[in-house]
Length: 428
Image (cartoon, rainbow, N blue to C red; front, side):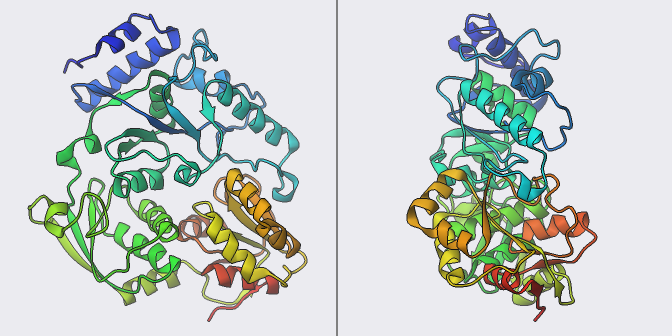
């Protein structure tokens, strides 16, 4: 299928906007042909990998060598520059990296890795990336609004933006997202199209929806019952979620499924009613999510026997400022046990807010480490030598249970904090 191009895209293809944009557009057109897309859309928001790749073990920390050579031009002749870099009218934020922005020793990392990561980020910034280093860019002003086109490498972010903001985007890998950032285009396909945004499976909520953990496990349970191209509809008796609950829900939904959009009846912009969410069609399947179901998953994510813990983390996705405020209130006057590391993960603009508000000081005086950018799933060497891990995110527990050969516990933020103070996880 021939891809229809605008006048600006034709000029780009002729090389009039620079060699990097020409080559990126050629590859995006090929991508569109593979997808069967007849045209491209101009994107306004992008969320991109920019730090050291988690699998990268080299000692060369130069952006064009690590990214441009891998995704755009393997010969190394075409490079990104400040003049011929990412698309000028595109708002780009970077995703998490495997390094904190300020600390390396506390997570067992070599200084060279930390310095290399910083070097890559600064080079990306020079090409047009706004640095936030977060899996939840909507926390730091990256908000594609209804019908805006976006690209992202983060599975929970594509869910949030399609489902809650009414923006239009498809999950992408590092390569296609990078190319779209260079030329400002992506194939018009999948969730860009109205007919592909209708719900397919209905989930009647018959469980508690009060806490962050309730929504964490609801997302986990729904994802377990979905096919790759499904779009779930959350119906029934549920309490409308806030931002904290939503980001937990989408993270676990993305953990147990590959879906990229979800409707909440009476809450999502495209689902004022169940009939609207379905497009007046019959659902492919209807499920009831009971309390027994979510309790079973919650139990399965946590080690069954009480025991010592020496690494605990809160913040997946990254903590909001309100979450940090609540954690500080809970920990005021308490102290993390010696030999135990408690990490509070957020993005560094929010860390600055926590510092100016006094919340970070309270947590640090209690013995917590305020961390930015990554998490236990992405920061290399963080878990070396640990005896037991405590987490309040279903996604982290899901993956760490298969990664580690030590007990992994899953519970509420308060249970994580209590275990950090005691150095011991008490299974109730």
